[in-house]
Image 1: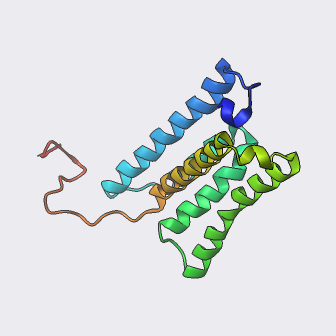
Image 2: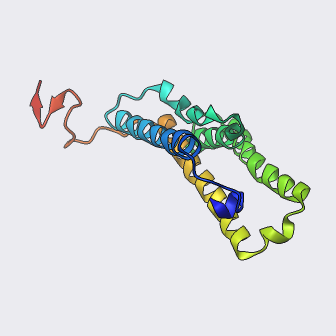
Amino acid sequence: MATVAGPESEVTWLGTFGFILLTSALVGGLLGYAEHRRRVGRPRRRLTLVPLIFAVDPSALLLVLPAMAGGWALAGRGTRARRRLAWSAMIVPVVAFLVIVALLGDVPALLRPEGVAATVLLFSCLAVLTLACSIPYRAAPPPDPDTVESRSTVGVRG
């Protein structure tokens, strides 16, 4: 975090554990639950809104909304033209990042090894969030002959 935020960054109970770790664990757990429901053939479309929990910090919407659009496109939903439009929304965080760096005059710092590492970390986390956002939009897999029905427990009806 010090690489991204600078030496003035600090760990606090509310900021680090409340806003970052707790919300990330909640979003990850609910997206895992969405994958479980998708695999048993009972998806819930309301779980597509789970990443908006990150909007506890409204500035996170700059990353979350394009990731949700990219997840929708990645899942293959909608027409080809709409998927292209959703993919183009993924450019927004990249452009915003470059504009902010240019406005702050930090381009030389971005080219140092720690700047490159922070940039790679930021965009790899965005890529993982985009992949995770595609989970609730994916179609349910076809039933496998060896699959136990969702109303069964350990192969026993009940």
